[in-house]
Image (cartoon, rainbow, N blue to C red; front, side, top):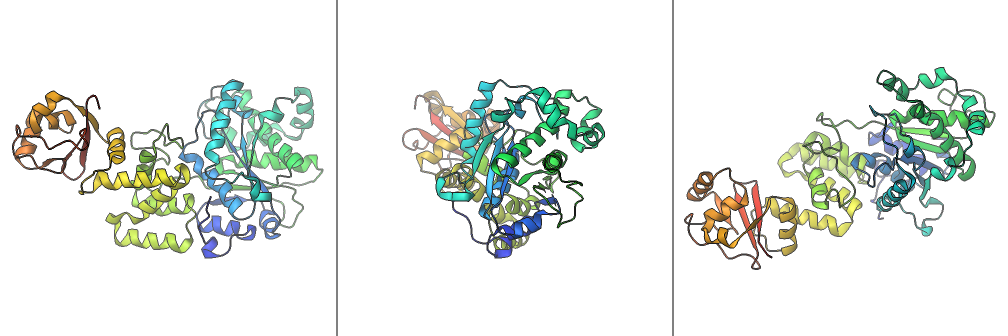
Amino acid sequence: MTPSAGGAGGSERTLATLLEELDWRGVLHATTPGLPARLATGRTIAGYNGFDPSGPTLHIGHLVPIMGLLRLQEHGGRPVALVGGGTGMIGDPSGTSAERNLLDEDTLASNVGSIRRQLERFLDFSPSAGERGAILVNNLDWLRDIQLIEWLRDVGKHFTIPYMLAKDSVTTRLDRGLSFTEFSYMLIQATDYEHLHRTMGVELQMGGADQWGNITAGLELIRRRAGIAGDAETAAADAPAPAHALAYRLLLAPSGTKFGKTADGTSVWLDAEKTSPFAFYQYWLNVDDRDAGTYLRWFTLLARDEIEALDAATAARPEAREAQRALARDVTRRTHGPAAAAHAERVSTAAFARSPIRDPSVLATLHAEVGGFTFSDADWAAGPLGIAVASGLFGSTGEARRAIQQGGLTINDERPEAADGPVPEALGGEWLIVRFGKRRLAVGRRSGS
């Protein structure tokens, strides 16, 4: 992991400048009163964020908490990624409209392993990182041994029903139905924070604004079991505070679309098997101009002056998409590695430029990702018209014939003179590139190749 230079306005990254950086990036929603003073001491602080292991891969919506942990590490803190193997068996009502399916332990263990491999792309887990080294924990390790009577005595007694009902994560679900299992989630998350604080010295929990109620419940449990009176949310900044909270803003795209979804409503995954590096790169390349600056601030480590220069470039030359290219390059490199990012960028440039494509690896990716088709000997014998129809770019034979007659179609960058004329030689004996207009492209592979 190679950090970019420049933090809050280009200043050195330290714990004292963490909140300043989160603020100018537009990420910061709220903190408890004593956190700025704690960070200003410069002593390493361990902070955690939770991840739901209900599936084997994270998606780009998880980049908000992932980048939060990364920024904490960049500023000198220790990131703790909590994978909820225990809470994943229950489900968090925050931000959901229905109760989640309960997963068995073997499935959860497999998902946890997969998620760790994805987090390792962002966080430094190596021993050489010292006290800043990232740690992954699974709350099933301590929740599985809890006895109900002891838990009700040691945790449940500290929380009243009115206190729990006042939390947004509960009130937003009451009218749609909320099981007791999910209602208990707040106390279980509070148990997690108290356990990490007591056994590992974790002093900070981070999460989205919709998690604020669950996070502060953890603070209350820590304070009450330590015998500290008062309320963590309203305490004076200089009041004793054994633990702290930080919430990120909920990311709503300025364009009005839901962040993390493609045009057809599917999720964009961090796993290359579910969303290819090329498709991943294209998602970021195609974001709206109004979103590009926000995403550069949230999802890259680029310094403030670099991002503001890209903002200016977008305003002056939106058609160049400089901000989107920088965004796509940076996020894809961090998620999938430099080689995959460079290949995705090369394929993207080749697909939408008019220069000839001769790289077999680029052709193979385009065939898989952008209008791939297979052509037979019979299609070849039928001439350019047969290839044009096989490409799938046209709704009918007549439309394909007119495109050839009007000179709008190219095959391997050559314009056929007649619909029944010769087909240009296949690249490498197997590839044909069919283009029509500026944006319509199909890559054909000879059957049997």
